[in-house]
Image (tube, rainbow over all chains, first blue to last red; front, side, top):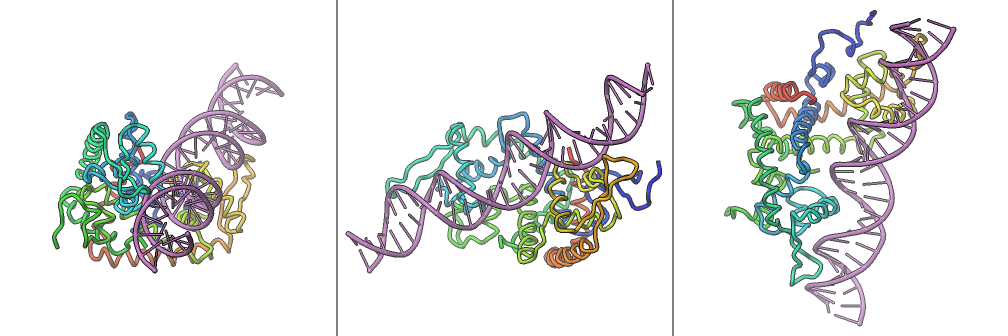
Length: 162
Length: 162
DNA sequence: ATCAAATATTTGGATATCAAACTATCTTGC
DNA sequence: GCAAGATAGTTTGATATCCAAATATTTGAT
């Protein structure tokens, strides 16, 4: 089969990484970051595939498991999503009985969200899977983990949410 | 500054990172990866805000700028997206005159995509902005850049697209 | 009382993604 | 040749995000 020289997709000997990170992006940090996060998230999602759990629940349930009770607005600040974004997620969690809404007696507009017993159980299951996933990452990253965490934290700190 | 153990949202003196990366995820690599990529992508998007360029064009245009001509299927493999995902992006690029479609004389089903002169110009503009963004990242990452690239590449290689 | 601020929801819109159905065309096997 | 199956690209449908603006309700301050 005749191949033109620069048709990478057809070049023999290319491996997975070559395909996911084409030459043009060889030293483009942002691109690597994106692809790495993508495969990581997909791996995590795949581990959840056969459960009744959703990836998006992990951060919410975990934050709630550490907080006793938060209003949607507070939760929004902590997890860095718009309040309106949380509404549907919270609805889903409420329907499944994983969270409870407690009206604030001092403010009729407001209510607090907290985990039910079932919610805590779900959080545990999710946490176990997340741990398993992270152990996989730890293995890949090896001794550089702390350095990596430090760098990523620096990126978040410097770029903020602007 | 005194920090209560588990009431992060209400504790005074918390900074941006504390908010974007709550305590519960302090050493969860996957979470850091996600947030870091998120702020990085948002920073890049913000730089494009006042242009007529879209973040999603960057990879497509850049790959095309290196390849003379690719079919949508080949492009799909190179950039790791489903063929159907590309259709609408390519449509947008074609409407704006950034790409040209050349029917394959040997196969009427197929066509090749290649950049127009205008497409090359757009790629250059995007590339310049991407470089600027990446320089920002480089500054944050500092001398650890190569190590970081190596780790991210390892993650992509190990977790693949499975 | 009124009016501004705050709380949460709804609605609308923008992205991106994949999978499956569909059309048109090509290739194979007979 | 021609029917059957493979392939290329598109369309459609579903999911998952996300945010911003408009809305209703309530609160609090004047």
